[in-house]
Length: 148
Image 1 (cartoon, rainbow, N blue to C red):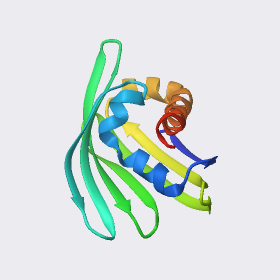
Image 2 (tube, rainbow, N blue to C red):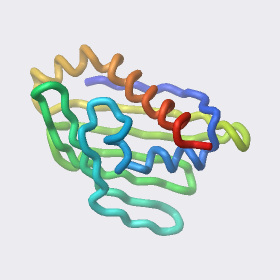
Image 3 (cartoon, helix red, strand yellow):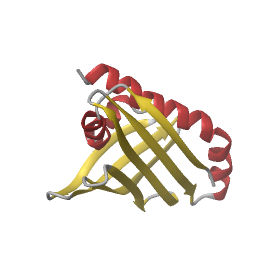
Image 4 (tube, helix red, strand yellow):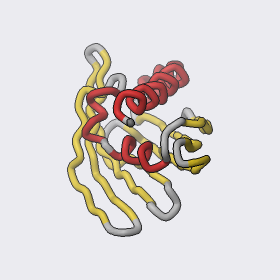
């Protein structure tokens, strides 16, 4: 079961990066292997935001829709993603944002994921690092394209 944690500096404000990560409906535009992305429910108050969203992931003939719960804790600048349904046995994905200055911040990204199908999980483990880098790079590229 792959686990990864990295800390990376981005030359964008904390606010802009948080907004980018929470724009789940846009994932289908820029995330590799994401065929469709859709927010199903969104509940917002002053302290936090709760989103239930579907992601359709595909590669060649493989397609899978999974539903996740996304919790944004405004006070701690933290986004936590867990699996609700689909082919994911376990998912804990955490984004934490630390201000460096007005135009830059550190992003601490943590993921712990395991798929339900043991055979697919073995293949997934072999390509995890490659996929992880590709996905993180796609968020960075999206920031370059959309944040002014």
